[in-house]
Length: 403
Image 1 (cartoon, rainbow, N blue to C red):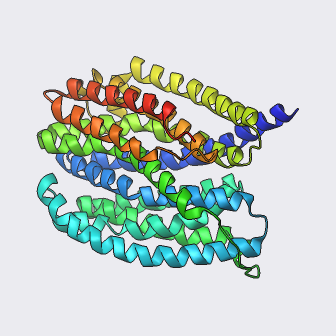
Image 2: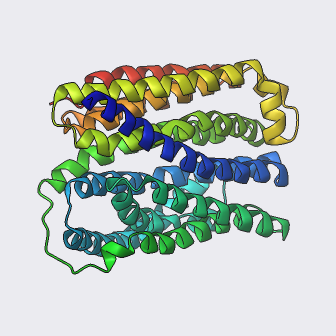
């Protein structure tokens, strides 16, 4: 009976997040769908590269949300949760300002390397503020298993972003309009997230403690950073080595392939708080196996669709026929599918407190950079190199982060 309840918990939580988060991802891909049609290929390549930078900046968001989720899962007192929220928010404001100033300096070098206007890169850095503030409230929602509220908050962000992007690009703002819409979307979502935890914010604050939070944060940050870097660097490196039009074409293939990763991400998000509460290794293994089975089924279906209908998918997404992409689309799709399993394994180990050797994960990012920087004579070669590095990363995740 315990296993049946466990399976229902994972499946129920995953299903709630799958529905709401995939609506979020659907609106996000409508955003990319609209931008791929409203912008020329070279401009969309710039936007995709900027989004890769934003994904990397999102490491703060994902790691903070995961840590807050873990500690709020075990905290039953709303007054202590409020104390955690206030302390975390104050630190988020402080570090957001410091990180944004640092990013403005780094953006000078990025502008030169990526051949993108400095003002555009600097403008995209505004997401740093939401990346540190928003995960505090979202982490509480995830930790308390308010999966529907978490999903609704994300859907609001995506809808606002899509609406403003179409309007601003139509008005002639081009890539600036798309970036501005992104910033507007996350800040409106931030304000609404406070409403979703109003019961906690209205409670009487009580001093709480979070033992071991700093020692736990480091491996969480590194693991998430490596996953985000891994699915972001391919677009950035393509922008460096390929002609702008070719880089734009690869950006389309990469964006399509990431549907698999983001579409199945709710499984690991639902698994994490459930696995955190697991009291035995047997329960923990059951949680992982159930989640992995669910993930496998979804990935097989997604890969089958991409393999059978690559031309149709590209036509629908880009609004044009790009024969070079049809033959290579399956390879980045397989790469991001493998990354989905890697992320699931890493999240399970982190939820179980397995945090040693985390620094070795950076080795797989170096391997990816070397392979993509070496094998880039064609989109096919580049895509296979990405798939190969993804497989190596999965292998590493199975043996690292053990006590």
